[in-house]
Length: 112
Length: 109
Image (tube, rainbow over all chains, first blue to last red; front, top):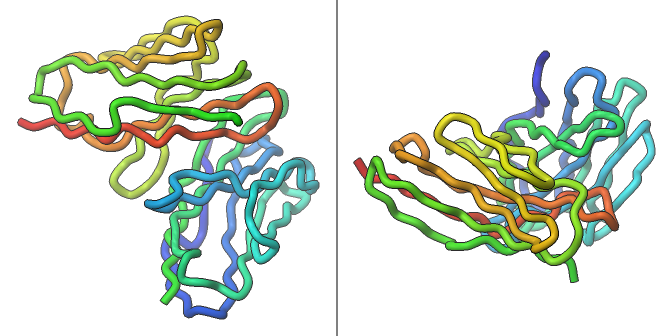
């Protein structure tokens, strides 16, 4: 079974621009979560989607948003990029009723 | 508030040595996972261990849920064990993983 995939793997953007990241979960998994990793703040939860509905949201500004499609693929969007948004963005999926989460390879975003 | 704390933050070992990494969590958990982050950033699942003991080769883990801690044991360490180890907890009150700060392990040849 294929693992969690994320695209793109690397991205360079300029302040003020917006960016969209994509995540495809393990086949059959309907829950997708997003996390941000920075050297200063560590790994922090952004949001979780299940069956196209956002179930939880972390403590991030409204510039961070996401959605999930009927095939469980998820996208997250960051608008009006700031230098502090430079980070590794990780996506994880888990099966319905399961608690173990599986992570993708991440998207490394650099904002200049 | 809900917290996950790992110790030590940094660890340097000689190849062949054993080590114990600790993870303390502040509340009851539904899930406790250990990960190894590879040099490219991906989190590799090591153990899913909300309670009890599991072993996988040279690695083993124990979670004592009633005392709110988990331990990761690495025996006969190899240079390829180097990297950052994270524990993460899924607390009863929510659906998101809360991560510890990680233990950075360096194994010298």
